[in-house]
Amino acid sequence: MKNTILILLTLATFSTFAQPRNNEKIEAMRVAFITNRLNFTPEESQKFWPVYNAFRADMKTLRKNFRADDKDGTPLTADQRLEFDQKKLNLKLTYKPQLEAAIGKEKMNQLMAAEEAFKKELVRIMQERRR
Image (tube, rainbow, N blue to C red; front, side, top):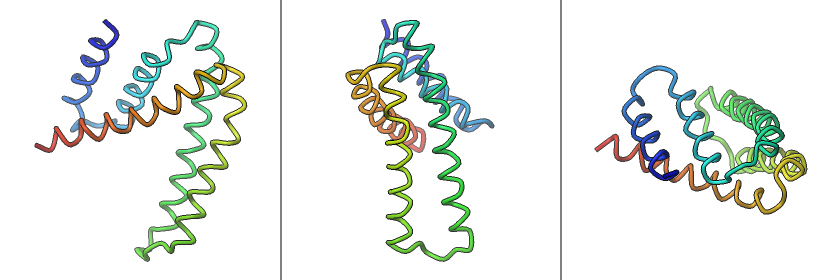
C-alpha cells in the first residue's frame, strides 16, 4: 500500500515538473519518500522534521553560496570543489547528533540510504520525462 501511494505521488509530481515551483514539489516528494521509508512514530516525526528542515535550509544556503562563487564563468578549481565537499560534510556532521537524538542510530542509517535512493529516483523520473 505504501509503495502504491509513493508511486501515485511520484506520477503526480512527474506530470507537473514543467510547472512553476518545482523545488516545492521536489521537496514534497522528498518528505513523502523519507516518511514512507522510515515509518516514523509520531514522537520521532515531531522531533525529526524541524531538525531535518533546518539541515536542508543550511544545505541550500551552502549550495547557493557555492553557485555564487561560480557566477563569473571561471571553472572551479579542484581545491574549490574539495572545499565545498568538505563544507557539506561538516554540515552533515554538525546535524548528525541532533538527527540521531530525534530518530536513533538505526533510523539515521536508514535516512542516509533513503536520501540516496530518493536522488536516484528523482534522476530516473527526470530521465523518463526527457524521453
